[in-house]
Length: 267
Image (cartoon, rainbow, N blue to C red):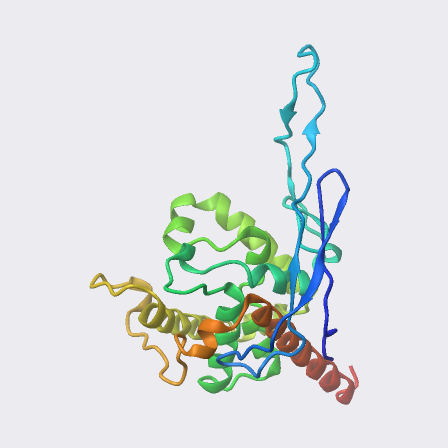
């Protein structure tokens, strides 16, 4: 199922006022490991408004920024609870939009490199190097989808933060798996997806990061793939909207194939 050619996103301020994003046409871009995305759009959003908390009792007219927020506002205007995220507040287009604007490696790469582009690379590696079925490919594509809501932290930072971070990350990863029926596939293909993720990491380190003599323990024995050039002109000039749309299209195609297969099997 192909996504609409032009997606209009709305960003909601905490006070409920809506800043409507305007869809702007862009020239067609070329992705590196996926077919050329169609219907590229870009949004120019007015800044979200902020609500000041009600004056505390006894402080008179003094205003304070509200500090007890336990939710985030998404690009589509939904509010997602950090403590009790619900599948109904999470959708593919929100995930794709967020991931395409989150840089990997805390921005240390020699060009903008998003989690969405990384996810597409992991999916392609899972297909070409591990020959995973469509269920495994969908799980590979969505392996970092939770980062759309908790952001992408470098692995050393995650370890430094410790248990609280892993609890939050696991909470959203579980909701994502439930929302997209990926529990079985994620478990069945966990080893191959992890290896594909590490191969992508090795490839990204070799092609996008400054050279370093210090080895990364996680990459011991892992070799980068040679069939992708992350610094090709196509990759360097592809806008974030192209990666967003390519992520949506890949997910829609895999999900459609899953539904077709389920109907053929009588499920």
